[in-house]
Image (cartoon, rainbow over all chains, first blue to last red; front, side):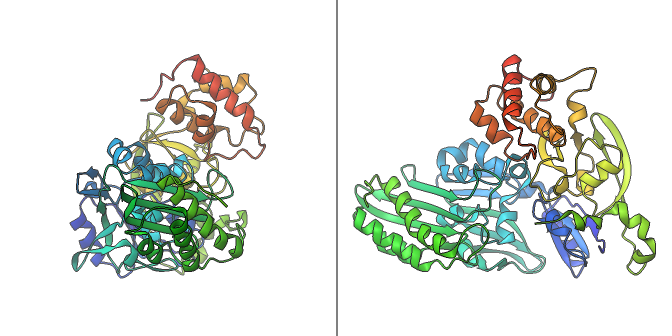
Length: 288
Length: 186
């Protein structure tokens, strides 16, 4: 394999000024995607690889009443162990516990999972449901992109050459929000998701005020189910409306056949799983 | 999934193929230093060499090479007291870091309770997964000194045993947790 140069700067500015010096730059953090891919890249991943693990500005989790902000280097283990997150955004820990295995969770970062942009990236569906915003820094300055606009297709994101994710932020859900997460996979650990579903709801009494539903592993990249959300919002929570919304989730999905599951089965699960999670979250009795 | 046939793309073999490598600009070597099991190691390495290859080339062959894709956990080490797959870290990223392998957890003369119980319970069949298993078990018991059987299963979820000797491994970790909370490490 063709080799590459390596630097490990300590500040974001240093990272960006170093990145300008080379035409083909790639960033590395946890390395849990970088190294397994490295072995198949005969031309090497880039001329220059910049290690972000020593940039402290990219670390740290803050939870305020209004916003939650996750540093790009927040590991999946951090999502399980951070007490503020556990209390305010429990869906992230629920996802993190299903994410690969303990050693991968210790190294894999939340920004890495997003920027890799894989269809089965487990961190994306809950963040989509939380309506997360991606904060980027690049040679042309800072910008923010909503996560649903950031994902463009199969392993394609809106990130530009030389840019890096600095933080992921989202409005902290209210204390009494309802949520659900399910990862359908063939094993309990080290599994690639067959269908991933995340649901976040805000209700007042029986009325659904705000709904977010997202699906992973059933499109080119994880998706939000806007139609189903729109249908639910402002309605009284009952089995009929949940059923209709779940069918809309199924309609928007376009899964593929692969070694883990058939497209037909995945499509079916895109109706079953949202229905199950919505019923559980809204305490509706599920009948068939 | 990667196959063993593709394993030739390593620094170890590139040394023997110098004539071919001259077609490219020869990769730069980076001087690095880190502590392995408390002993300082100074060396130099290519940027593309994984920590797994680097450690094995330096003689720390207790770090096993299983899948090189983060799936099997045979190369598990503690990096700054956090369990990690050495195959998923670049050697240069370990500069000035603290590394612990299974030999740092206990030696033949001075076994760690986990290692003792692995022997007592026969939790070793072919032995290939054992170094990684013990490092993972160490991290698990450091974080959670009295895990339930399900928590033990979740704790070693990243380590594969191809002999499928999981029951004895779980028994051993459970016995080690009942004996006494692990004293070494954090």
